[in-house]
Amino acid sequence: MAVWENTKPVVIGLSVLLAGQFGLSLKSMFGIKAAYNDQSGCVPTSIESDVGLALFLMIMLVDFVILILTVYKTYVEYKSNYHGGLIKLIFRDGLVYFVVV
Image (cartoon, rainbow, N blue to C red):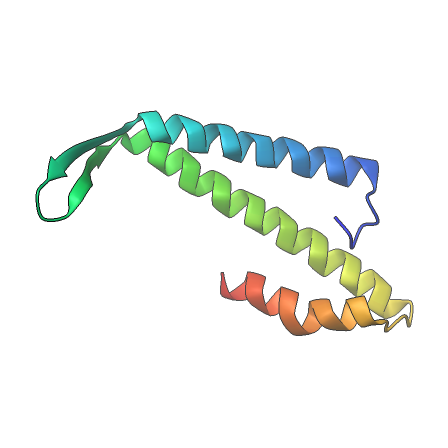
């Protein structure tokens, strides 16, 4: 959000996406069945497949949206011949991280 200087549509959009991801994370906690094992303790045995899939897709969607927003904003700033410290840091560290993920 720092890249977008706390622009309201970006903050609200990302907040909604992250709230959805958090809600799915909470729902997935209650969809997991576990059993106690003497050697390793509590071990998950199954998860509801639709909740697990939805959580995975939501995580990928949030990461992809952040990647697109970051690429767009850094490209616009780079084209305007502003090569400040934040833009260099994002190119060096941030974009590489998101592409690898």
